[in-house]
Image (cartoon, rainbow, N blue to C red):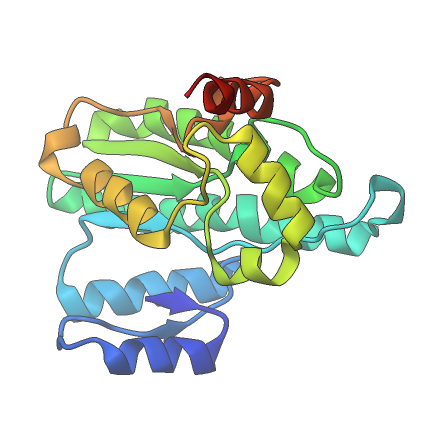
Amino acid sequence: MIDIDADTLRIAHAVLVTNNALAIECDVAEPDQVTRAVAQAHERFGRIDAVVNNAGIAVFKPILETSFAEWSRVLDVNLSGPFLMVQAAAPIMAETGGGAVVNIGSISGQRASTLRVAYGTSKAALAHLTRQQAAELAGIGIRVNTVAPGPVDTAMAKQVHTPEIRADYHDAIPLNRYGTEEEIAEVVVFLCGPKASYLTGQTIGVDGGFDAVGIGLPTLRGEKKESQ
């Protein structure tokens, strides 16, 4: 378990009813910290079978108000972080026959929207990084895929999604609800496991159908209600 937020990391670690978890404070955008974190995990467990690149940040501002520092930090964490982590972990994974990497992308990397110039760009680039990693690491037994969540009830979403934004999302999602963190985790676990053994280089949207549709859902729902 790797996070820059030491307090939250300790709390999460403390509630786990297992001795098989290691909490490491680390900024994934810092190469030296990533190298040390991966070395600690390797020393503790003796091997690395799967890496989930879940660390991410977002800046929600108009493009003309986003500073270069904000742009750079988002790309450093969301894009350079997975690059550094895989670069550090892949040789260790190869020692025991390979494994799986799951990069956590976003629907914002597949569909443009306002206020997400840095975040959306970083996630779009991450989808291509996944394909690069999949192509180059297959030879050492490592599969790499991206999970691209749609709107999910995470702590970040609860902070920044107003009731109006939530209503807009419901109008655009065929399943008519936000996803849960557990639903994302189920797909991640699948991709890390043997049942996904022939799956690599893919971006899998876990988004309630959001990326599959355009406009018209509210009208369609209204028509259905009227016909009932």
